[in-house]
Length: 111
Length: 112
View 1 (cartoon, rainbow over the protein chains, first blue to last red):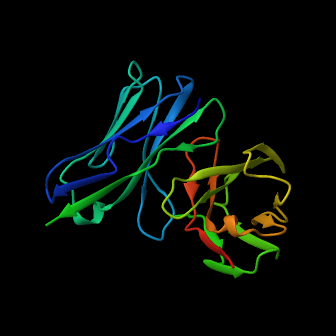
View 2: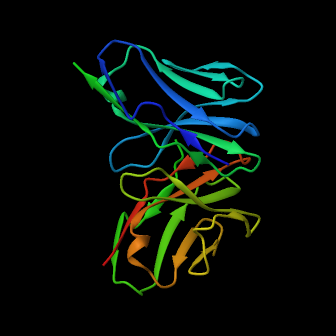
């Protein structure tokens, strides 16, 4: 079936450390993946995306890694800042353009 | 930077009443979507819309739901007879070429 799941519901990190948020997906037909950040009371905010023909993509302070062999996606945030505190969702698009979201990981950044 | 906007930010209604949630997608986008998020749960797809017709809908999007693009800028979601379980955050999203979807801030719907 279609499902996207996150391994860790809450991740706590020290300010300045690197964060790694993981996501497992089950649909091998998915060819496009997106990470969204959601702050309390706001809509999902696009962070970074990756297509299935790539295994790594870098943005500003963020890197997404895709391992199609084990159907695993990760988001790495370098030098985590208090403003990074939010819930992070991975989402996949199996075949059509509808997004299937994971359950979310809450990132807490401590000073 | 262009963004998706939604109104109202919070809608309170009585069970059985009709509600219309409004969205203004990013101006050059052609693909439009509605999602919902029940409190504490993940975001769920409701419907996608392209070229003035529904492209895909989920099983949540039953006969009580409808979408419309009444003019060149608005995209609306109507719930004809609201139920208690319709209480959720409703997000509109748009994309230029059916890839990256940009979300609005959401409308919190509370059904009493």
